[in-house]
Length: 367
Image (cartoon, rainbow, N blue to C red; front, side, top):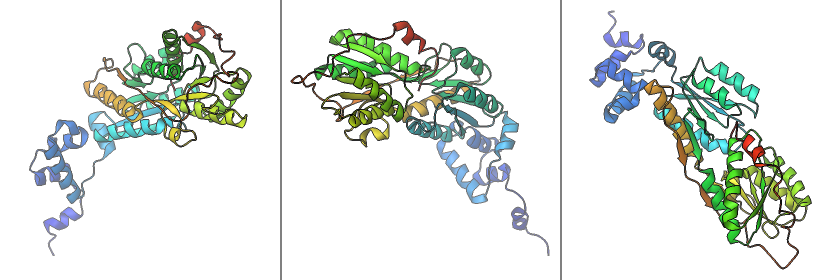
């Protein structure tokens, strides 16, 4: 019995030419629909995808990489995947990558410069570009990476490297204004990692905002950017009381609240506490955490879109940096300062450490 045309099709893989014929377009249009969706009319691209699905056509990423010299993979390097801050950042990055037909390779540096450097070296041959979120590498090391593959840095600003950062200065001003309006005259800043660019920026911004509101400020730390770090900070705070605390991030702030509560110190009755980032746990604790909200999902998607633009243009350096807005979210962890009893704000007149030490903390890293 002679094999039919349909029988032949059943025994061979559907090709790009089959899809093109059925969709009534050129094979090159089918190729662009899968490799560069933005280059094809949305209606045409959708018709091609539907026809491809009906015919059982599947793209071959390896073959596509060989033909285009691209893998259509991006590396997203985060400093600590266990940090809730990164969950929305990762989702935003994955969504933007998927829309462009790219896959995200997620790497956890575990707060280690050595592990981060090794992971990047392994990823470079396989990816088309890299997003560094919370990098602990030095500025010079990141510039070296950017000479090998397109790079966008998240939550950190580096000369000659595209970046996406939240408006730390505005967020800190909002926090300081809020505490001043509640009658607090002294603020303790609970610092995060020494290698954090964002930590240095937030401390400097608090120093700059303090005179406008007649605030006295001091800094304690550094502490690990997690709940145990905040509990440790609470122990320091009990030895040197304060009426208001601004923590480097929400996890530290939550740890401070827990540590103070364990010592019989009420939040916000005795101490008001503010965090940064507005992670999901901020509204789950009691009292709810007042925090400076950063657009985490948008940070991830914006950084990825900028990286894709770099890859598409074939240029290593472009002015693609962005500063995203922040918003103070007021919850139950801040309240009017009580003046009837001995103030827990005593002992906050000095600023331990120097501005130079704070500046050193901005030389590398972010979250």
